[in-house]
Image 1 (cartoon, rainbow, N blue to C red):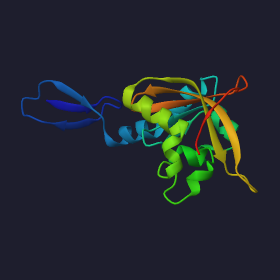
Image 2 (image 1 turned 120 degrees about the vertical axis):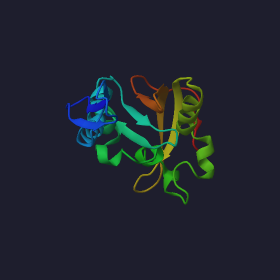
Image 3 (image 1 turned 180 degrees about the vertical axis):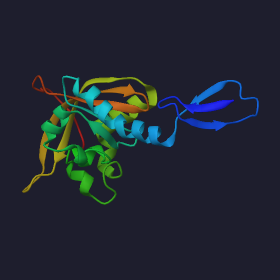
Image 4 (image 1 turned 90 degrees about the horizontal axis):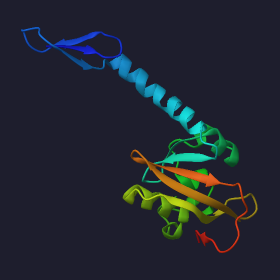
Length: 174
């Protein structure tokens, strides 16, 4: 049986002497090209969403974000990918020993809890009020968001709503 690359047609191997049948695989150059293009295709998909959105792992590590999220938080893509959500949002507690997700304050973080809950159960969280203390040059300031989460493969889409004012009580990272 021949094994050929389904992308470019290159012969990969011949596993037996009968020579009958074809099996498809992927060669290393094509695999590398596909892997390199995934983040770009994913960003294009996320950019079609009308609100700021981040793709986050269950550990709270940001994989990527759409342009609306980059603009909202005043960052570029390199300041998102591979960083914890608290670092991306500039949470004051993310700079404490242990970092984002590992301090006493993190157990009450609405953003973190929503991501964990959605990843574990698949249940979306919709327009949940969240407050965090953000780093600022002189003193931390409270920033309020409405967030939603939705499971997407093995990740969670974290959506930031900003189309209406937030009123009433909010759950805070404190």
